[in-house]
Amino acid sequence: MAIKDEIREEQKKFKDMPLKGKIGYIRDYYKFHILIGILVIIFGAVFLRDYIVNSRPDYLNAVMLNTILDYAADSDITGDLAAYAGVDREEYKITIDTTMRIDLEHNDQMSMASEQKILALFSADEIDVMAAPLAIMDTYAPENAFSDIHAIMDDAQIKAMEEAGFPVYYATCDGQTFPAGFYIRDSVYLRDLSEHGTFVPEEEPVFAVTSRLKHPDAALQLLKMISGQ
Image (cartoon, rainbow, N blue to C red; front, top):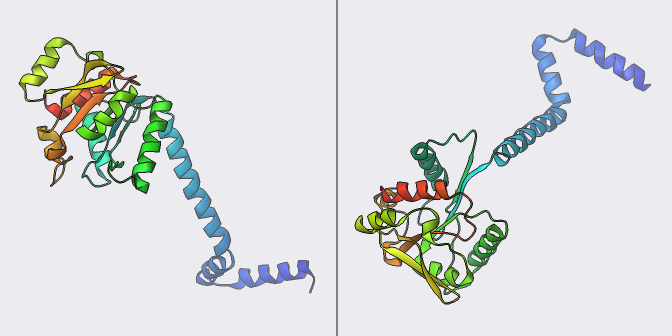
């Protein structure tokens, strides 16, 4: 039978079918095409969403290393900061990555991947704030990773933080020692963020501004939210 005759025969069969039969025919005959169409729509929607989100200007880029939070915590902290600082997340992008871990004693695959990601963030100037256990912060300090905390606050504000129970963290680089941030072990916000807190308290977590700081006002807002000051 010629192709034209086959098409005509299929059209006649389809025309004589009841509605239920037509639906089943379309479903069975075109299910592959429908599936492909659905996948194209899904991937297109995801791509468009990511494009829109990534095209927004940054409000803040922060990294919190070695947290004991679950993977949903990123959105919790970014949402809290947006509400605290009055940031429209449809207009600005807030990135606070809590998924990275570095084990200074065992250079495992997770540690190597995290170190590479942090290096990439510094290279791209996309890291305003780093918070991590003291041992990790002291590892990065000699590599010119941090800025003087005066980049986001004055002496009176620094003194107020100390009096509120947040001692100054001093970084040393090229023989120079300077105040780069604060110890945040006693942060009520971080303690209450999950059942077990955010950091292991005995590891002396530290908040510091980086040498790639581009959003000082946003960094200060994050610090205020964490400290409650």
